Structure formats: structure tokens, C-alpha cells
Length: 404
Figure 1 (cartoon, rainbow, N blue to C red):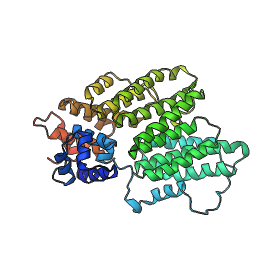
Figure 2 (figure 1 turned 45 degrees about the horizontal axis):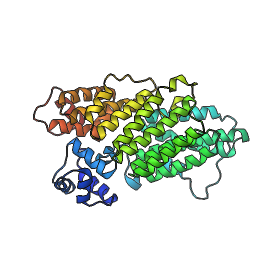
Figure 3 (figure 1 turned 180 degrees about the vertical axis):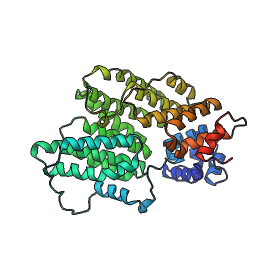
Figure 4 (figure 1 turned 90 degrees about the horizontal axis):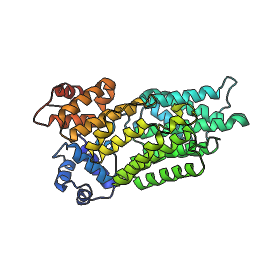
């Protein structure tokens, strides 16, 4: 069950943050007795507001506390062969010979399309497909960057940057943030050798996200703001692609501010981002959306809903979500998260019927994702603990495996 290891995770994260139980209780405003009961296994679950408060006190995402859904099977050093291949592609063997030269049939356009397809699979949570193709994409991009024609090397380095950025995201989903940072740092180096001025800040945004996963909130906020400010100063926000990258960095900075208990500053950043997002469609069309940061009025509003519900403002979350119309470029994973966040907001407000209706929609949209997502399971468990069960709750509880 989703919360069986909650106490162990809580204790590990608290120690990583160098906090005593009493200090965590003070920072999160959660009773020290509740923290002790969870860590000692005398209490196996907690209501969502309590979990939100503990995550905020620890400076981590709620999913970090509950445990992310498995992207692919991972067991420490005994990872499956696909992830071993990804690791080796990111970190080639010491003193390995130079990559083989690209062949006569090689096409940079085809490689870019394949990398874009891999990102599409990633956003659809089809991680097994990504793991299968990623080592080959990195190898081909490395060959293009090192052995291609002088004219093609810049494009090869750009492809290598995007492939290594994807490797960083996969590593994060596997819970291996140090490997992710290695991949992303190498991606930044590759991007610096390309002619794409937007690629470095795009990858910096991924770095900021990885810092967030590690609880390095000040670092995440700092790098995102620096990259966003540099883009403005260099005049790179006058195109649709440039504004999207700036917007993604601004949203990332807002998320870091909120997780660092500065919800007011985060709200101001998100409001500014939403205003700017309205200009994207009025600017010259960009490149393949799959290769550029997600930034639109829909994506900003989804992130505002997420921050509101995560930081104790469920009423704001439901107001923001009401009547939303998602743009066609909103990735499926973002749509899924929106439904989950709305369900959480209803649950936090004690609206079990509204939560169940939203979870039923989530089940139709992403059944496998919901069945394995620890946060979805936690919401169902919260609802099941209520004295009155609305219609449909039993079917949801059976679906996600909540014991009753």
C-alpha cells in the first residue's frame, strides 16, 4: 500500500534535512506526537493536509514524501538492463574510444524527430519506450557532434543536449537525482557548443527541477531566476519559443518559492507568467513544440492549481480550475495532474462526492497511472476513512487496492 513506508521515508527525509522531530513539528505545525507515531510505525497514514504540512516542513514535494509512482522497475544497484544502458550512455566508460563516425545514411533531421518522439513518449509516461530508444539516441547525437561535418556539428551538439536532458528526466523519475544532474550538466556543456541560444536555459530549467527534488529550494530558485533574467536581458523573449522557455523558468522559480513557504511571492510570479503566456500565440510561430518548454495559459493555470492545493489553499485551487479549457499542446501528463489536484482540493475541503467524481474522470483518462500513483491511493484512503461514503467510492477503493 502507498503509505506502508511513509514512516521510514519521513524519518529519512527528516534526517537528510538535519531536523529533529521537534524542529520538524515546529516548521510544519504538525504535532510531534503524530511525527513520532508515523516514524515508529504506530500510525500508518495521515490526512492530506497533514502530509502537505510535513512535505512543506521538509522542503520537498508531497510525492517525494509519499513515494513517486515507479517509472520503471528500479532496485538500487540491481537496475534492469535498460536502465544500465541509459546510465552507460550518459556516462561512457573511462578511456572509451571516440564514437564511430556517422554513416552516409545518417540524417540529423531524422535524429531530431526521433528525439522529439522520445519526449512525447516521456510526457505520456511511456517510460519503457523511452528507456529502450534513449541510449541509441544519445550515441547517435554524440557521433554527430564529434564526427559530423563542421556545419553539422553545432546541430549535433544541440541534439546531444536534448537527448542528455531527456536522460536527466528519466534518471529523476528513477529516483537517481545525482545521475540526473550529471546528465544535465553534460547536456548544458553540449548546448553551449550548439548555435541554439534557448537550449542552455531550457536545460537549466531541468536542473532547477532536479534541485527541487533534492530539497535544494534556494538553489533551484536562484538558477531559474538567473536564467530567466538573462533571457530577458539578451532579448530572447521576442519569439514564441523564447517566451515559452522564459515562462517555464518563471514557473519553476515560483514553485521553488512556494515550497520554501513564500506562497505570496510564488503567486505574484505565477500571475505575471499567466499574463505573458497570453502573448505566446501572437508571436512568430516557433519550432516543434515537443522540443521546447511547455508554456501556455493552460499550463500556467494548471501549475497555479497545483501550488494552491499543495500549499493549503484548496478554495483557490477550485476557483482557478473552474471552467478551464486546456489548449491542444497541453501534454497528457499535465491533464492527469490537474484532475488529481482537483480531487485533492475537494478532499481537503471535505467534499467527498466532488473528489470521487474527479477521481472517476481520472480513472477514465489514465487508469494505469492512477492505479499505481501513491497520491491517488492516499486520496482514496482519506475518503474511505470518512464516516459517509459517496456513491462510486467502493469501486475506486477496489481499483487502487485500498483495504477495507
